[in-house]
Length: 317
Image (cartoon, rainbow, N blue to C red; front, top):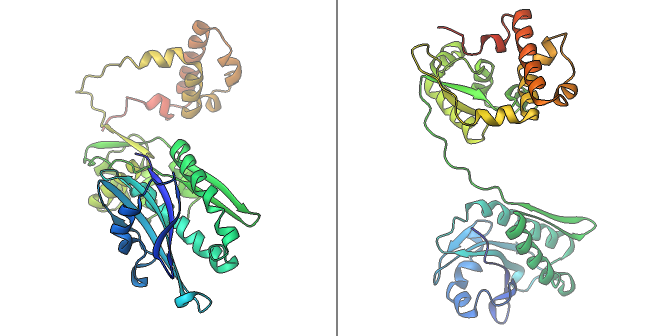
């Protein structure tokens, strides 16, 4: 889904609502604009809000702004920054960008008269095509207005909703949750109680009991972590189940960097005093490297019976 066009419109004291600049040129015809101009240059009560209208098979998403000051004709400047999409496109990821862009234009107008001065307003003829090109090609845009003003925009795609969490599933961290917890003071209190119990072994119901948090709240928190791809869910380990490797196992044997990363993650290089450095193991021939990795893992298991490497797949209820 891409932006088809971007435009800047304002209320002219003689001609009424007008498109002043747009990219690409003539992307939004005067006929279409006139049919919905009442929703683009709008009453000040609705300014500062995202307004969406769908005329003639397209979707126009705008951010109308009203700046009241007696220096303007009719004591107000009315303008709108808008994006044009296909009618069926999901414009949700672009709404924060539009709100930020409109608020920045409002701020520059109040501080330096950016829109009321023809010379500075004319720079929109190059700024808008640049923003359109960068957002379409790269999903982000950085445009310098002057030494004091830079427009930084980035599209954050909407993630799919997370699946439901079941009582017997086991959350496994794929990011360092404790590090995230340590460097943020805005984490939910329930999450702060739940995260210490996410160890790749505890299942959802056990986490709820250990953290003394209602299981419905635990599931909600875990869905949030799933949404932001901080954890993944696996089935609980049971001796009555049958387990088999998948073809992806071959990628582990053929990727030396992945092998070293796994051992570093499990703490093997830190726990095994006799192990060589990761870089030296990485440089070994394939067969010798595999023997070395197995030797390190066995040595670590002997030295530390409670180490996760030793416990992997052997923990019983």
